[in-house]
Amino acid sequence: MTGIALVTGGTRGIGAAIARSLKAAGWNVASIYHGNDAAAELFRDGTGIPVYKWDVAEEQACREGLARVEKELGPVSVLVNNAGITRDTMFHRMSFAQWREVLGTNLDSMFTMTRAVIEGMRERRFGRIINISSINGQKGQIGQVNYSAAKAGVIGFTKALAQENASRGITVNAVCPGYIDTEMVAAVPQDVREKIIGGIPVGRLGDPAEIAEAVCWLASDKAGFNTGSVLTINGGQYIAN
Ligand code: NDP
Image (cartoon, rainbow, N blue to C red; front, side, top):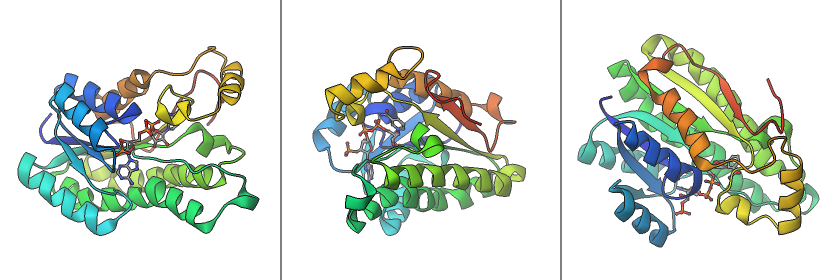
């Protein structure tokens, strides 16, 4: 476990749980966030995990941010592309700005962040890239044409990149969470939430720690034969593959 494990969106929700689990597993972890300074400071003070602020949708910000992280902490061995947003509305009402914003944060970030680390990983012949997609990238979701398109794109990105880098000791995998109890889901109206839970066979939302455990395994040395896979963790809501 040498090098840094870098988690985008790693100060709240699923990303914060991933960062905590990776630290508990022995990794030196750093988290990236975008705008919520209060949440980031709370997370940093509570965990001792350093936090960095930049927009993962911006190519130059990622290149410069990555250079700063590597100078201050060391080379990145594990990249968890977790940062994501929603801007839900029916497609016939969707603005191009709502489309672009969601595609930028959820899909452009796959390029910007991964491109910044991949050459170093190839030189060092080790890397773990774990991309957080979504159940709604697998099955599509009303009101989320932008988000579903971006998250489906994450899966294609993962499968292609895995093939390009397998011979260099780099694994690339995607995780597709179902509905997880975070602020993103808390923003969904109560009646819709109850309907969602009614459609989950295990009868509850997932816990961020349940996603974090899977990511930790994918980051481990033991998972070296596992690449290009899509790990579905959704309480049985959608049986995909
Ligand atoms: P949250 O909204 O709780 O947290 C999002 C995190 O991403 C925050 O740390 C936020 O930073 C960061 N972030 C957002 N935009 C950017 C950006 N442009 N640049 C850098 N950081 C950014 O999200 P969740 O924990 O719920 O979701 C995490 C991931 O899991 C997302 O990709 C989401 O799509 C996916 N997912 C979530 C599900 C769920 O049920 N919650 C289900 C399936 C997938 P800041 O605090 O500064 O805003």
